[in-house]
Length: 489
Image 1 (cartoon, rainbow, N blue to C red):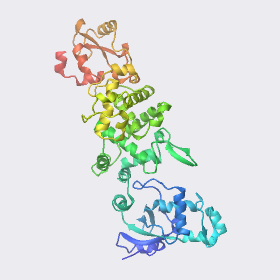
Image 2 (image 1 turned 120 degrees about the vertical axis):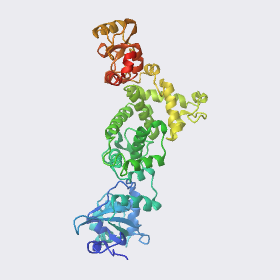
Image 3 (image 1 turned 90 degrees about the vertical axis):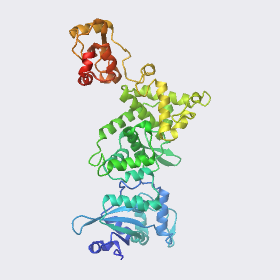
């Protein structure tokens, strides 16, 4: 049974409806004044309409009236008894285009209606000159479906699983439709309240302005399909799930659904926000440090690999120096992409097949592509994926590290005497020929965190314990040192 005859009868008809979906129509005049949300929700696309597209819509209303504007979908939400507000589930671009005209955002395209040349007029000019034609816009009715008593999740499901059958959504649009704290963070950080990394600027492209991301290449296209959201979500997915494992759209989407589910990690809060914010701040310093001749290459994939590899290095070895790391990265990129030198010819990819030119590895984010990219960078920077090595990194200078590797013998003897001839970690006596100078704050942690070869960072222990300590801090090592090791020291 059809309950809705017109939008204006909503208040009385809702009280008797037992059907969640009903057919009806709505006037533009009502849309101008009703409490209806026409803004992007998590499950909706960004605004992608052009002025020409909007003008063509006005042609449909005033000139090509035989066509009609496609149906829209509206959610009815009851607040206090008898008080309703509305949400535009689908049809946002159609409705906002009309409202934009009425708000004076653009002018009509060339057209003659009822013998009146109204082309080039804005809404105010049309209302003053031809009020009857202006009223025709306000009185125009669009067919719609009304939905009652839907939850947010049901509304998102409707948009993705039902309406998407004809509208077609990208994977990130589906992920953003998974309502929750994680999706809120992605959408807000990349778009609505953007981190500085996602600053938008307008550039001239012919006669029109084109919006781009300030710190990325223009090749990182913004077409209104949540590209910045996708970049951020993929960055965090790879960071949290292991970058060398790569990703697929299905795994990425399933992960977002999982962490946002009732039993998911982020059901009550995005608990990794501090880490995510830190990673974005680090990414910003890296992209700002990119030499001008290479900014043209900062597309989605290359920029992401720069950030994730540099982050991987700073987590394992110390503070990366962006001004040195980024040029070093592009030096590797250039040499290993050279089809004349063919450095890649004697190398294999992770899947044991012949390696391609380095630049061709940046076409996908699967484990083979990312793993091979990291393999080449590891080789160039002297990094053992399991243990690490400092020789090539020291030569390139990409880490914030004290270049002095060891303490001098005189300082070691002096510190040993200050310690009463005892091992710092075991409080057991050590012979002079068994002394080792240890960095209490590991050298690999970098200068900024105190990993320097200075007397204040020196403690003396046995050679055996020094070899076993690795990259642990002095306090952590002392706390975990088993008593049997102390006795064996």
